[in-house]
Length: 164
Length: 281
Image 1 (spheres, rainbow over the protein chains, first blue to last red):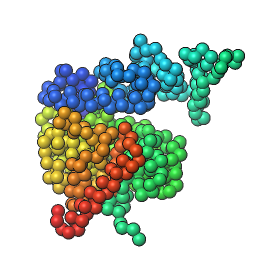
Image 2 (cartoon, each protein chain N blue to C red):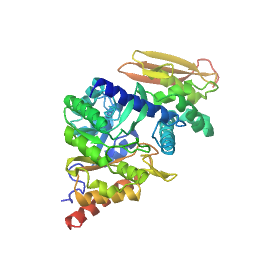
Image 3 (cartoon, each protein chain N blue to C red):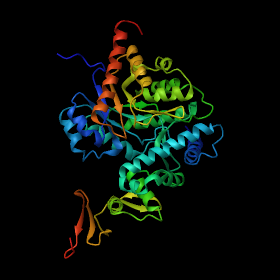
Image 4 (cartoon, rainbow over the protein chains, first blue to last red):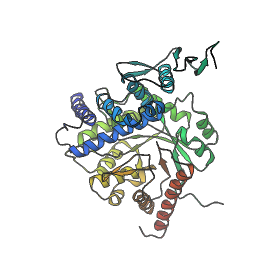
């Protein structure tokens, strides 16, 4: 098949991908109702995957989770790697008003040990990583380390001299 | 001596997921399918290594080769799938007749391809490129599609049959996907079965689904519906595939409920086998 034919074939597929995120204007010939059903189904699937990887974040957003995630997903395609974990990282980072619970802080820090995030795109981190975050409990901090080939370690540490 | 499995050599299986690892370890009759993109062949999960030590069949299942896309399959993705296949001593690997990215944008899913002569040619070239780098045979799975491309030039069964004939690939027959497309786009799934090259089946998929606003959604997060089990019986009344595998990806139920799905699939296969044995198809 000639490269030009492949380019045309890809352009049609890209059009469908756009329409599956924003089905209001279907490409020529597509059934608008079917397209909307497919779009909703794909976004629900992404939302399920993100909630599985980010249970504290989904819980913190509560009844607003699905609506908030849908807004994000309609403007941001899913990641190439990492599925729900990477998708959730981009989602969490796109929430300007998020006041994270300690559990969400832990999820964010663990994700940062796995991925680097640039312009909503998460790519796997390669080198070693260490990060510390303050928790709402002023007596404790969260420490996450990642050492290539050994793995990840995380712990909430009580600060020396703090009151129990 | 136990009865031969109604599902043939591979028997009954389930897609390996961390959430199902204990159920799979405890039920030695199950063969498994491993999502290739989710594992590192040099660092397989311990539970998968145990299955390997027990010589349980493991079939790598690719989900992001995008064989139905415009780009030829990426060499690094093919090398990864090949490495997983070699590590788990796979009898074959499987992927989808679908695209999952275009212009560098990911779909996050396996999406249907247009059923045209042009698509057939592009996908045949992509499949041939994949087969060159894979150490074992490739089985191709047709997908569930809530939305169809306009102006198809052929039926889905003809498209699949033609692709398999051109490439020599095996068929991963997904009965839930067949049920979904038949229900959502109005054709007879039982008639479709006899239009497919059943002698090329590597194994069979069955997944759970749900009816939402009159459409069947192939969720892999719900129980297997009776209509899909009916197709299992119909298929086994025509042929006896090597294996049949349950896909469950979310909303993991209690083990007893998963076993209920597995038992229902086996019972439907057995019932179909009986019909075939009696010559009443």
